[in-house]
Image (tube, rainbow, N blue to C red; front, side, top):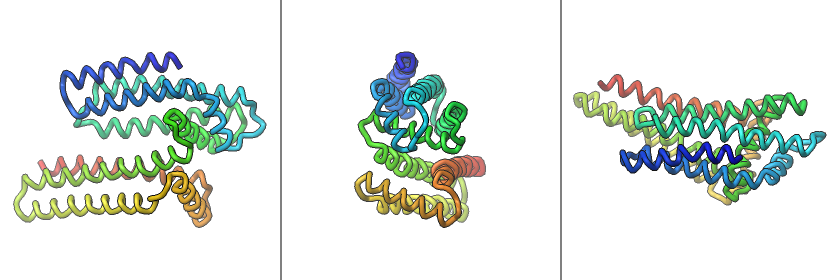
Length: 274
């Protein structure tokens, strides 16, 4: 874990230098991101035992030794953070306002890839199915951040899977709105009105959906988790799927489709607007 911490320092230093030198918004975001990673690594170093208990409780691991699980958790944490340090350094150095969304999507794909790799290793070592181990890796990843920040597994899941994902989807929707408004200024009255109507309408739709999500889960975080869990179980039974599959479809596949679709739409509108 010391290697993870040392690996994250260059990104933090470079992000601070970037803010001082360039005074740009993206640089400020990189400082916050780098600081978050560094402090999370520091906290995770001292909570491996707590993370093991979390994984054991969530996934109900039986017949697998505690030492093996701790080894998997520690290896997954170290491996994930080492790769995160590398990507974070590249992100701080090369990310700008033009390619920001590409980096965001890449980071999300990286998270899924890391969980999949840990799941494959867990599948080989424990004999459990890939689906079981992949979902367990996702739970361990969320739990690691939760434990590091003093949150329970239920609390971090609601914050990450509901509020943060909904916020990212909203921001990608508003990106389309912003590009529609910008491009409308380069056209005559009719086209301008259509672009403004499309952009503002789509942005309002995104805001309404976001507000509905926040209203629906406007309760203590652990209660919101229980409500979401019951809804996912209901969907799994209704559509003859497993609980895990419903999670993959909503929180990974659908989430990526929305933000990638919005980013591509925003770029297309920008190209057409020229």
